[in-house]
Amino acid sequence: MSKTKSVMASAMLGIAIVTLGACGGGLETDMVEAEGGYEIDILKLDGSETLAFDPDPKLAPNEQSTIEFWVQPQWNEVPDFDPVVLSNYGTEGASYLIAISAERDGILIASDDMLEAAPFDFTDDELHHVALVDYGDSVRLLVDLEYVADLPITFESLPSNGLYIGSADDSGDAFTGLIGGLRIWSVAVEDASLAQFARRDVADEPAHPDVDALKLISDFINRTVIIGE
Image (cartoon, rainbow, N blue to C red; front, side, top):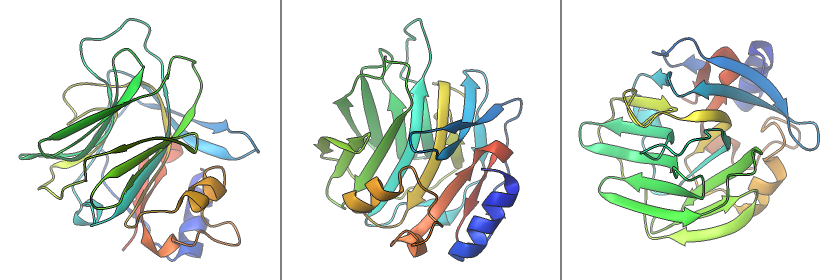
């Protein structure tokens, strides 16, 4: 979204416009139109850069939470690692880490010493909407609003060195492709709300029913994120 649009949306939502300091540079950004005309703020990553932000306690997982984003992996040769989309990482490991398998045939989720995986074909060179809903005892994975799996994992709150978009910790497992439309919620967002707002701005009237639980929304066109108070 444009900076003007992000500020207007944040004001409508009652979100404080607090941008975290980015550590990476040289990233490409774009707006991509999804089905229905909704424009997604997109990072274009070539595997050499990470968008990294200082740690913030507001981004620690709650008892229940939801992470959603759009993704399109674009590597041709299979790497010897699973490229990371998003990570909240620290000295004791990741509170949450989400990666696409090297073969682009699945998604991996890690937290603390837990690691789970679920199959999905990402080789079609299309943008896909991914939602991870943590119910406190399991995480439900939906891709393109379709059920994929319930995984025996939850997001654990651990000390954080930062939030990283496109790598595990700004030093490895770098992602090549498109990442956009990141939203992090402090509740388990219902499937109906995910479907209603996957291709809509959360500030559109009527606003998202969980808008008060929105902890982070990306503004990748301006290479930043906006977090709630």
